[in-house]
Image 1 (tube, rainbow, N blue to C red):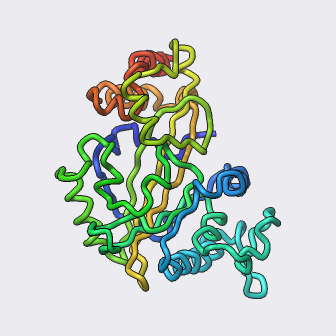
Image 2: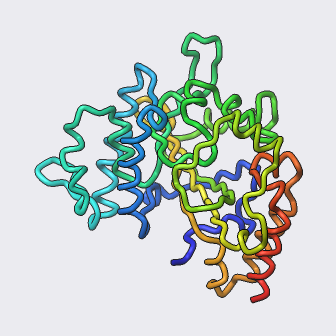
Amino acid sequence: MTPIHTPYDGSSKLFAIGLKQLDPAAWIEIDSSFDFQLAEKRRIHAQHAAQVFVAEPGTENAQAEVLELLRGHLPHRFPRLYRIDFGRLVVPGHPELDGLEEQDLPPLKKASLLVQEDLIVMRQGDRGSGESGWRLAAGALCFPSSWVLTEKFGRPMADIHEPVPGFGPGTRNAGLIDRMFDRLQVAQPVERFNWSIQSGAALYHPLSDAQRIDRATGRPSRFPDVAAASDAFIRVERQTLRKLPETGDILFTIRIHLDPIALLARRPDRAALAASFTDQLLALDVDQLDYKGLTADRERLVEALRSIAAA
C-alpha cells in the first residue's frame, strides 16, 4: 500500500486555500479501499442517520442533479465497478445497492452511498435568516474530519470556518473564499487538499465545537511517546468544488485517505517527504496547533518523522 496523495510534501500548505484546476475526468477517486468504504458508509448511515445527512426543503432538485451527474460519470469512468443494466445503475459486488435509485431516500443520500466521497451542497442567497452568501444547504457526511455536520447545517461559509485560525468572519481568507465560490464556472471544477494526524484508523471522526474548545484548552496528548507517534495515521482530505449547471448550486466533495505514518518509510523519497512534513509541523503557530489538536504531540511526531528520514 502506497499513499496516493502526499500534500504534506509542501505542495499544499496547511491553512492556505490552495485551489487548483481539476480535470473533470478525475473528479471522483477510486482506490483499493472502495469496497470497505462503501460498506462503512452503509453502516454509518444506519447507525448515525440523523448526524450524517441533512437537507433544506427545496434542495431536492440540486440533490437529484448530483445523483444524475454521478450516474453519467461513474459507468463511463469506472466501467469495471459500475454499469447501467436495463436503465438501472448497478455496482457489482454490492448487492445492497441494487435498486438504490428506486428506494424512497433523498437523492443526495443515494448519491453518497455510491462513492467514497462525502457530498455537500452549497447554496447562495438569503434563506430568510438575514444571512446571505454561500451556506451549507444539504450534506451527506459519513467521514467527518473533526467536525459535526448538524452544527454547520444552514450556516454561511465564514461561520462554518469560524474555528479555523485566519478563516472566520471578517478575515481576508473568508472574503477570498466567498469570491471564489461566486466566480466558480461549471466547466472548470477545482480541487484542494487538507491533512491532519489522528490516532487510530476511524473514518467516522466527528468533533463538536464544544469538544474542539475543550481539546484546545486542555491540550491532551494522543501520542504519549515517540513509539505511539510512529503508529499515528495521516488523514488526507481531497476536496473538490464543481458548480451544478442546472441549479447553480455548488457541490463540495470530500474524499478521505487514511495512511499510517509508518508507510512513509517504504517510499524511496522518504527522507525528503519526512523532512517536508516536519517543516510543515514546525511552521504551525500555537493557534494552528490547538486547532489541529497537535500542541502536546508535535515534538514526538517530529522525532518519529526524523527517524523515518534517517532510516
